[in-house]
Length: 249
Image (cartoon, rainbow, N blue to C red; front, side, top):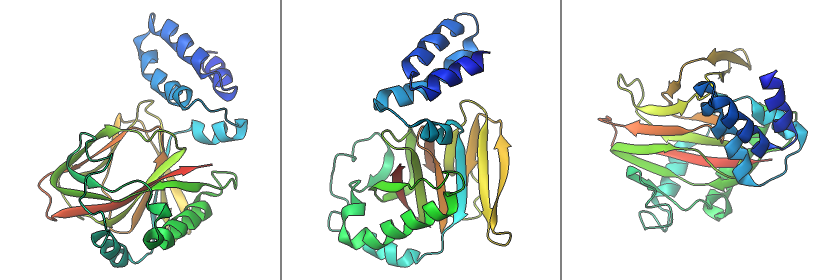
Protein backbone atom coordinates (compact mmCIF):
# COMPACT_ATOMS: atom_id res chain seq x y z
CA UNK A 1 0.00 0.00 0.00
CA UNK A 2 2.79 2.44 0.91
CA UNK A 3 4.58 1.87 -2.39
CA UNK A 4 1.32 2.39 -4.27
CA UNK A 5 0.79 5.74 -2.52
CA UNK A 6 4.35 6.84 -3.26
CA UNK A 7 4.00 5.74 -6.87
CA UNK A 8 0.76 7.73 -7.19
CA UNK A 9 2.46 10.87 -5.87
CA UNK A 10 5.46 10.31 -8.16
CA UNK A 11 3.53 9.74 -11.38
CA UNK A 12 1.39 12.81 -10.69
CA UNK A 13 4.39 15.11 -10.07
CA UNK A 14 3.46 15.40 -6.40
CA UNK A 15 7.03 15.05 -5.17
CA UNK A 16 6.51 17.36 -2.19
CA UNK A 17 3.64 15.19 -0.91
CA UNK A 18 5.82 12.09 -1.28
CA UNK A 19 8.50 13.77 0.85
CA UNK A 20 6.03 14.77 3.57
CA UNK A 21 4.60 11.25 3.56
CA UNK A 22 8.05 9.68 3.93
CA UNK A 23 9.00 12.07 6.74
CA UNK A 24 5.92 10.96 8.67
CA UNK A 25 6.70 7.29 8.02
CA UNK A 26 10.32 7.77 9.11
CA UNK A 27 9.14 8.59 12.65
CA UNK A 28 8.00 4.98 12.89
CA UNK A 29 10.61 3.35 10.62
CA UNK A 30 13.90 5.14 9.97
CA UNK A 31 14.55 3.15 6.76
CA UNK A 32 12.05 5.35 4.91
CA UNK A 33 14.31 8.36 5.36
CA UNK A 34 16.75 7.17 2.69
CA UNK A 35 13.99 7.31 0.07
CA UNK A 36 13.49 11.07 0.51
CA UNK A 37 16.50 12.07 -1.61
CA UNK A 38 14.95 10.43 -4.68
CA UNK A 39 11.80 12.57 -4.57
CA UNK A 40 13.75 15.61 -3.45
CA UNK A 41 15.81 15.43 -6.64
CA UNK A 42 12.70 15.80 -8.80
CA UNK A 43 11.15 18.43 -6.53
CA UNK A 44 14.23 20.66 -6.79
CA UNK A 45 14.13 20.60 -10.59
CA UNK A 46 10.78 22.44 -10.48
CA UNK A 47 9.71 20.77 -13.68
CA UNK A 48 6.49 19.06 -14.66
CA UNK A 49 7.17 15.69 -16.27
CA UNK A 50 5.17 13.64 -18.68
CA UNK A 51 3.96 10.43 -17.05
CA UNK A 52 5.85 8.34 -19.60
CA UNK A 53 9.14 10.09 -18.76
CA UNK A 54 8.62 9.48 -15.05
CA UNK A 55 8.01 5.80 -15.74
CA UNK A 56 11.30 5.63 -17.65
CA UNK A 57 13.26 7.38 -14.89
CA UNK A 58 11.71 5.58 -11.93
CA UNK A 59 13.98 2.52 -11.99
CA UNK A 60 17.66 3.25 -11.23
CA UNK A 61 19.75 1.80 -14.05
CA UNK A 62 23.33 1.79 -15.24
CA UNK A 63 24.34 0.82 -18.77
CA UNK A 64 27.87 -0.29 -19.68
CA UNK A 65 28.66 -0.37 -23.40
CA UNK A 66 31.83 -0.44 -25.48
CA UNK A 67 31.78 2.59 -27.78
CA UNK A 68 34.13 2.12 -30.76
CA UNK A 69 35.65 5.53 -31.37
CA UNK A 70 39.04 7.11 -31.97
CA UNK A 71 40.03 7.95 -28.40
CA UNK A 72 43.50 9.25 -29.37
CA UNK A 73 41.92 11.88 -31.61
CA UNK A 74 39.73 13.11 -28.76
CA UNK A 75 42.65 13.12 -26.30
CA UNK A 76 44.64 15.28 -28.74
CA UNK A 77 41.70 17.68 -28.98
CA UNK A 78 41.60 17.86 -25.19
CA UNK A 79 45.31 18.64 -24.86
CA UNK A 80 44.91 21.29 -27.55
CA UNK A 81 41.89 22.83 -25.82
CA UNK A 82 42.50 26.57 -25.71
CA UNK A 83 41.45 26.87 -22.05
CA UNK A 84 43.23 23.77 -20.76
CA UNK A 85 44.02 24.06 -17.03
CA UNK A 86 42.61 27.58 -16.88
CA UNK A 87 40.34 28.28 -13.93
CA UNK A 88 36.59 28.18 -14.54
CA UNK A 89 33.40 27.94 -12.48
CA UNK A 90 33.97 24.21 -11.97
CA UNK A 91 37.56 24.52 -10.70
CA UNK A 92 36.58 24.73 -7.03
CA UNK A 93 34.02 21.94 -6.76
CA UNK A 94 35.90 20.38 -3.87
CA UNK A 95 37.46 17.56 -5.87
CA UNK A 96 41.13 16.65 -5.34
CA UNK A 97 43.76 16.66 -8.12
CA UNK A 98 41.05 16.97 -10.76
CA UNK A 99 40.65 19.37 -13.67
CA UNK A 100 37.38 19.69 -15.54
CA UNK A 101 36.71 21.90 -18.52
CA UNK A 102 33.75 24.18 -18.99
CA UNK A 103 30.57 22.16 -19.50
CA UNK A 104 29.66 23.47 -22.95
CA UNK A 105 31.95 21.44 -25.21
CA UNK A 106 28.90 20.22 -27.12
CA UNK A 107 28.78 23.80 -28.50
CA UNK A 108 32.50 23.84 -29.33
CA UNK A 109 33.20 23.11 -33.05
CA UNK A 110 36.22 20.97 -32.11
CA UNK A 111 33.99 18.61 -30.13
CA UNK A 112 30.90 18.65 -32.35
CA UNK A 113 31.72 15.33 -33.98
CA UNK A 114 32.15 13.35 -30.77
CA UNK A 115 29.10 15.03 -29.23
CA UNK A 116 26.90 14.06 -32.18
CA UNK A 117 28.33 10.53 -32.33
CA UNK A 118 27.72 9.99 -28.62
CA UNK A 119 24.16 11.24 -28.86
CA UNK A 120 23.34 8.99 -31.84
CA UNK A 121 24.96 5.95 -30.22
CA UNK A 122 23.17 6.45 -26.88
CA UNK A 123 19.77 6.84 -28.55
CA UNK A 124 20.38 3.74 -30.65
CA UNK A 125 21.39 1.51 -27.75
CA UNK A 126 18.82 2.77 -25.23
CA UNK A 127 15.80 3.09 -27.51
CA UNK A 128 14.05 0.08 -25.97
CA UNK A 129 14.41 1.60 -22.50
CA UNK A 130 13.45 5.13 -23.47
CA UNK A 131 10.50 3.90 -25.57
CA UNK A 132 12.12 5.65 -28.54
CA UNK A 133 11.96 9.08 -26.91
CA UNK A 134 15.06 10.99 -27.99
CA UNK A 135 17.75 11.99 -25.54
CA UNK A 136 19.80 15.10 -26.27
CA UNK A 137 23.24 15.97 -24.92
CA UNK A 138 22.70 19.07 -22.84
CA UNK A 139 26.24 19.40 -21.44
CA UNK A 140 29.59 17.86 -22.39
CA UNK A 141 32.97 18.33 -20.72
CA UNK A 142 36.24 16.53 -20.10
CA UNK A 143 37.81 15.52 -16.80
CA UNK A 144 41.50 14.90 -16.19
CA UNK A 145 42.10 13.08 -12.91
CA UNK A 146 45.68 12.97 -11.68
CA UNK A 147 47.23 10.11 -9.73
CA UNK A 148 45.60 10.12 -6.26
CA UNK A 149 42.79 12.30 -7.62
CA UNK A 150 39.36 12.08 -6.01
CA UNK A 151 35.98 13.22 -7.29
CA UNK A 152 33.68 13.58 -4.28
CA UNK A 153 30.18 12.12 -4.08
CA UNK A 154 27.68 14.06 -6.18
CA UNK A 155 24.79 13.75 -8.60
CA UNK A 156 24.02 15.65 -11.80
CA UNK A 157 21.23 18.13 -11.30
CA UNK A 158 18.94 19.33 -14.13
CA UNK A 159 19.36 16.29 -16.38
CA UNK A 160 17.65 12.94 -16.87
CA UNK A 161 20.58 10.63 -17.61
CA UNK A 162 24.31 11.19 -17.24
CA UNK A 163 27.24 9.35 -18.72
CA UNK A 164 30.97 9.20 -19.24
CA UNK A 165 33.08 8.00 -22.13
CA UNK A 166 36.45 6.69 -20.95
CA UNK A 167 39.44 7.71 -23.05
CA UNK A 168 42.40 6.80 -20.83
CA UNK A 169 42.05 4.60 -17.76
CA UNK A 170 44.10 2.16 -15.74
CA UNK A 171 42.96 -1.33 -16.71
CA UNK A 172 43.19 -4.59 -14.78
CA UNK A 173 43.90 -2.73 -11.55
CA UNK A 174 43.65 -4.60 -8.26
CA UNK A 175 42.83 -1.54 -6.17
CA UNK A 176 39.52 0.15 -5.46
CA UNK A 177 39.89 2.79 -8.17
CA UNK A 178 36.94 3.39 -10.44
CA UNK A 179 33.44 4.79 -10.58
CA UNK A 180 31.47 4.18 -7.37
CA UNK A 181 27.67 4.35 -7.58
CA UNK A 182 25.63 4.74 -4.38
CA UNK A 183 22.69 2.36 -4.44
CA UNK A 184 20.39 4.13 -1.96
CA UNK A 185 17.35 1.97 -2.60
CA UNK A 186 19.51 -1.17 -2.97
CA UNK A 187 17.78 -2.05 -6.23
CA UNK A 188 20.11 -1.00 -9.05
CA UNK A 189 19.68 -2.63 -12.46
CA UNK A 190 23.01 -3.13 -14.27
CA UNK A 191 22.94 -3.62 -18.04
CA UNK A 192 26.15 -4.79 -19.74
CA UNK A 193 26.06 -4.84 -23.52
CA UNK A 194 27.44 -7.94 -25.21
CA UNK A 195 28.68 -7.31 -28.76
CA UNK A 196 28.79 -11.06 -29.37
CA UNK A 197 25.14 -11.54 -28.41
CA UNK A 198 24.07 -8.09 -29.65
CA UNK A 199 22.02 -7.50 -26.52
CA UNK A 200 22.13 -6.29 -22.92
CA UNK A 201 22.62 -8.77 -20.11
CA UNK A 202 21.07 -7.60 -16.85
CA UNK A 203 21.72 -8.17 -13.18
CA UNK A 204 20.32 -6.44 -10.09
CA UNK A 205 22.57 -5.17 -7.31
CA UNK A 206 21.28 -5.04 -3.74
CA UNK A 207 24.60 -3.75 -2.39
CA UNK A 208 24.78 -0.23 -0.96
CA UNK A 209 27.56 0.70 -3.40
CA UNK A 210 28.66 -0.55 -6.79
CA UNK A 211 32.26 -0.14 -7.97
CA UNK A 212 32.70 -0.11 -11.74
CA UNK A 213 36.22 -0.35 -13.14
CA UNK A 214 35.88 1.10 -16.64
CA UNK A 215 38.06 0.09 -19.55
CA UNK A 216 39.19 2.21 -22.44
CA UNK A 217 36.28 2.95 -24.81
CA UNK A 218 33.71 2.08 -22.17
CA UNK A 219 30.59 4.21 -22.17
CA UNK A 220 28.73 4.25 -18.85
CA UNK A 221 25.27 5.81 -18.58
CA UNK A 222 23.04 6.07 -15.50
CA UNK A 223 20.12 8.03 -14.03
CA UNK A 224 21.30 11.52 -13.15
CA UNK A 225 19.89 11.27 -9.63
CA UNK A 226 22.27 8.41 -8.75
CA UNK A 227 25.05 9.76 -6.55
CA UNK A 228 28.55 8.72 -7.57
CA UNK A 229 32.22 9.36 -6.85
CA UNK A 230 35.62 8.52 -8.34
CA UNK A 231 38.95 7.48 -6.83
CA UNK A 232 42.27 7.20 -8.66
CA UNK A 233 44.65 6.39 -5.81
CA UNK A 234 48.11 4.98 -6.59
CA UNK A 235 47.24 4.60 -10.25
CA UNK A 236 49.80 3.38 -12.77
CA UNK A 237 48.83 6.11 -15.23
CA UNK A 238 49.50 9.81 -14.67
CA UNK A 239 46.21 11.09 -16.01
CA UNK A 240 42.82 9.40 -16.17
CA UNK A 241 40.79 11.08 -18.90
CA UNK A 242 37.05 10.86 -19.41
CA UNK A 243 34.37 12.73 -21.31
CA UNK A 244 31.26 13.12 -19.12
CA UNK A 245 27.95 14.41 -20.40
CA UNK A 246 24.35 15.05 -19.36
CA UNK A 247 21.29 13.96 -21.30
CA UNK A 248 17.75 15.36 -21.28
CA UNK A 249 14.54 14.28 -22.96
